[in-house]
Amino acid sequence: MDRKGILETYHDFSAIKPISEAIYRTLYTAITRGHLHSGDRITIDGLATLCSASRTPVREAMKQLESNGILTYDQRVGYYVRIYSQKDCLDLFEVLHILQVAAVSVAAKTISPSYLAMLDENVRLCRATEDGAVFFSLNRDFHVIIARSANNAFLAEYIEQIYSRLFLFDFSKNPTLNMPESIDQHRLLVEALRARDSEEAVRIHTHHAKVTGNYFNWALTAQNSAISSDVL
Image 1 (tube, one colour):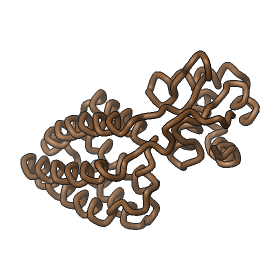
Image 2 (cartoon, one colour; image 1 turned 60 degrees about the horizontal axis):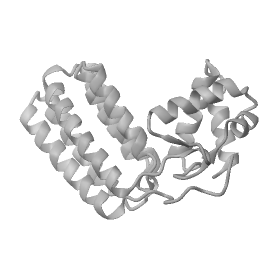
Image 3 (cartoon, one colour; image 1 turned 60 degrees about the vertical axis):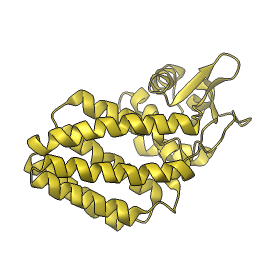
Image 4 (cartoon, helix red, strand yellow; image 1 turned 90 degrees about the vertical axis):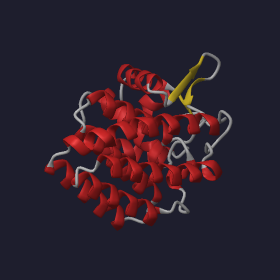
């Protein structure tokens, strides 16, 4: 647990209202940046003190994170960052793939020029970074953009929720992730969507998911496998 990093992250969001939303984004982003890990314990009073906030918005944010599967509450130890097994993650990835195939298939028929431009920009940003955590965030954004272009709010919401849980795993910061190959697959997928070729888009995405799935099988583990003794 990196308390300084958590506080710096809060400063990035402190202007957001309501405060509960600022604290929610702080904890979520602290996980993606590696300041909080699976099993790290968080108390309402400790977080309220760190962020100079009252207990009520902190409690609201933590309950929302619990409902989204990011925090776990146990009466004996309180709140802690959820610990997922490798099987949990692979199950999440399987569901994510099913949802993304549906999104890609529909998007090939509905995607607008503005969404295609957003995907082009996302690919450009991916090529510009060598940071695994930044890439994983952009990768999530890429697939969420496709889901939103399918004009199905629930589809996009469920895909976002699964990605929020996958952030708990070490592969989001793992420098061995083959980013160039993934970026090339993204580019090809954009071209298939631009051509309104649903069959080709699904084929490219399925290959992309298979490559990523193989990576999961050997690299994807939770950062911690037990509840930490360190408490915020």
